[in-house]
Image (cartoon, rainbow, N blue to C red; front, side):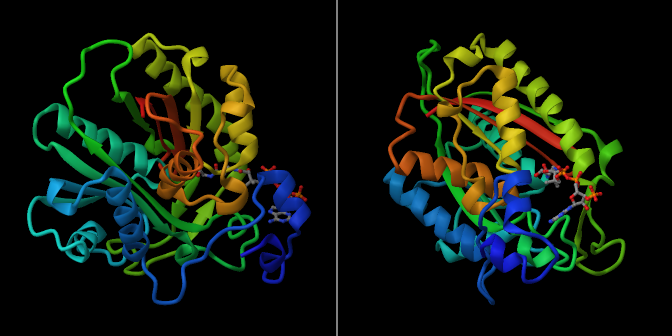
Length: 306
Ligand code: UT7
């Protein structure tokens, strides 16, 4: 759906959306196509890229704020569709930070010995929870999914170790009304629609993101100069560029997909990883910095070697 198409629904323009957000178009799931359908396709692509089958996977973690149903977790729908009869599957809900929360959970399960290989998926159908009469929100979001396979392998304990090197998660519920959905099973018995004070989110974003990124540098000894690719959550190109500037990361090292995907919440980072690894930018051994910030507020960052 292009900006021009959105401007046929609400009083907005391609110029406003492009200048304020960097978004030019977003993807909308087809009627009858659910979050689990998008997640399933991403999961199959990730398995195929990694040369593994579902038999190799112990656990599926799906990051989503837009599950097919209140329960069961959409992860079990994907588990069933993949023909996986063993292990466990569950959803993680941290809105736009969901993928980092899921990645960190998966990494911890590997480090504790609870699982060896995990499928981590981010999938969303935000188009279903948007108020398509509210121009301050409906222009911003899109649908999509991405996935990665994490595999526990012994590493030498050097600066070239691969995998998740350090992940840091944060939340602060005092901000929960800045970005939320005004319905739910326990409150209204309805699904509800997304509400956001965009300027308030914007105001906090760069500082919160930069702070948690500093934690990853402190924990690992790496600095911004060591980063090969910065893969941020794709909400607004102005937030992405301001964060890169603050960290002194050149724009050539920043993966940006927001122009074509819009904000796909928990799917945005794995979608960006997919794009930049498929087109050959991200190579095995590259050092990646991931970050996100969203509803809750929740935010987080991770350093990983691909
Ligand atoms: O995933 C994480 C969660 N989300 C985010 O990170 C989003 C964070 N926030 C943002 O990206 C930005 O705040 C927005 C893109 C949402 C808005 O950009 P802004 O530069 O902060 O604009 P604003 O909210 O200050 O609004 C500026 C003007 C207002 O008009 P007045 O009051 O100046 O007359 C709005 O009514 O733009 C108006 N406006 C629009 N005009 C055309 C708001 N939405 C639209 C629109 N089209 N879609």
